Length: 249
Image (cartoon, rainbow, N blue to C red; front, side, top):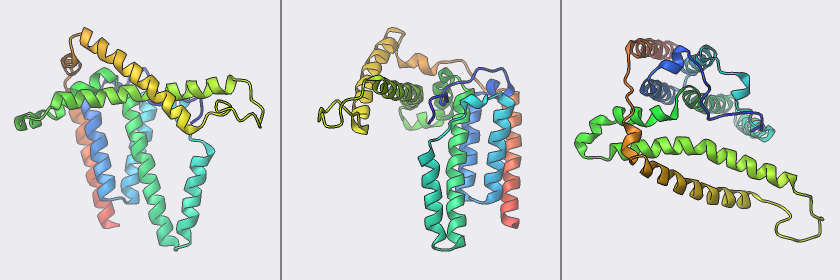
């Protein structure tokens, strides 16, 4: 992705999307994902894409926050389309539908991260998984693990970008120097990023312990409101309409 993009970070705002409960957004993403996975039709994909675009416009997401994949990403998609076209137009349609499904689901997930504070994710997941407590499952621990993964992913991406930028600033070594540090490969970047991630995770664990443990991460006072109920009803009606349109078409 381009270095000008700022994906996987909350975009400040005071829109209705920002004020919705985090659990409502997770339910909507899950419902849209299940619908498009069970019925991967063009009406269903069009509905999800329209919801994502309208939500991004309503939330005031700037263009600079939209990830811009590198050229080879689109090149792989075009190459896959050409390969499937060799098997006939039906294969190309199925391939394009699968690619669209993947892009739409990724966009909807990123949209949740753009409009949701990370502090609200763990309590929302713990609330949604509350019925599993009757089975004596570690709901709070799962919620904390998911929230910390979401919080740590942007930090890991920033670390990789910083390592790459620092390597580009180094003076270029002679082509025949043979020194192992002359070029930084993918394995070297991943190793350095993992080392930094382990150090950051240890520091984060100490900070969490000093603030009372992981129980405080799931104790955020956040509950759904009337706006959440209205949005869930509207999304449910839209999903039912997309399913009916898929069956009729």
